[in-house]
Image (cartoon, rainbow, N blue to C red; front, side, top):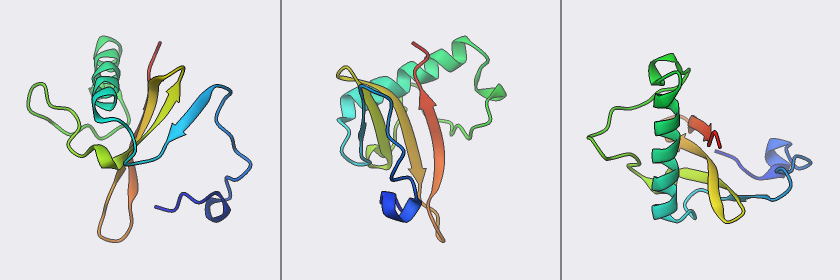
Length: 103
């Protein structure tokens, strides 16, 4: 999936102040897994996944991320606060999930 700002036309778009983007494949696995678990718990405590317009793949209990290299994250004050998962398809990649922490 193209991410070069010159290709996407998003060169003038910047993250909010204090937020840095960690490119796909460069996020630390432990904090990424913790963020995934926090987001899943927040969704379940609110509307639940069945109400979300997202494809949530079933996982064995306690298992969340299968391939951390497919995730880019947003980092604020040293903590991961949001993520995007890119799913590879035969013709072209697609965004599989975009999520941010509630708090």
